[in-house]
Length: 273
Ligand SMILES: Nc1ncnc2c1ncn2[C@@H]1O[C@H](COP(=O)(O)OP(=O)(O)OP(=O)(O)O)[C@@H](O)[C@H]1O
Image (cartoon, rainbow, N blue to C red; front, side, top):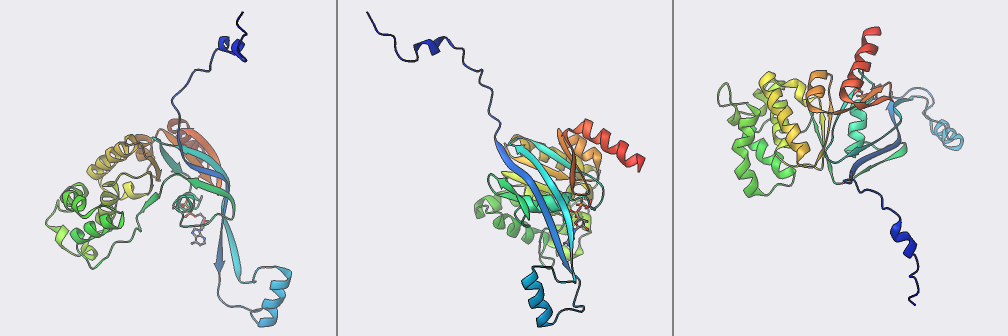
């Protein structure tokens, strides 16, 4: 007689159905972000007053705190494009900067997989250099190989559309309108595949043709397995680009879900204000 193997009964137990794994790329866990604003020297800055504050562990009287993000939690997955919407000052740019690692969280934590890249309208390009030179510098700064940069440079200029009204690519950036500069920044950043691409209002600055092209590019980046975050007041851009949207209000996460539902709720809120 053959002894039954340990655990043989378990063979009859049906195994759970395997679903394709969703890979988290950004986990924001109860994040609080507080800006400390130093308002210049006022009374109480003597060494004795400073020592007293140190002992009592109180803030300097001329430091104000702005609690910009209050206990926000969400998880983003590979392949998602997520819109971030909300009234002015609701904390959208702050949370984006924190995901990029440019701001620390005061409480909670933010975990990211890979290196997030923040594409803001303030991204640094050098005003005295031509658009062409900035394309090369920007691409090298993102870690692209010089051969790759040489291959892509013309395409990046074309995509940005800065040459649509003359040869602007060879002129210094300071001669560009703010919209042209923003388009060039977006085009440079979008030339590389990013693990996590954070876009702050960049799409809103372009004209209609550029907006269509950039929305298409965001969709391609997402299909290339990255995660894209898009902060915008342009709800149509969010609707066309993102299937999921997070709504922040006064630093608090109000809603996180399918874009249509979240935008509908946000519009109802904005109209009732
Ligand atoms: N550098 C800073 N120092 C102090 N407070 C700041 C700073 N940056 C932002 N804040 C404050 O933090 C809060 C959130 O600002 P944030 O820029 O993140 O909002 P936002 O949702 O991106 O706004 P908007 O839609 O107007 O761009 C606001 O109250 C703002 O005044």
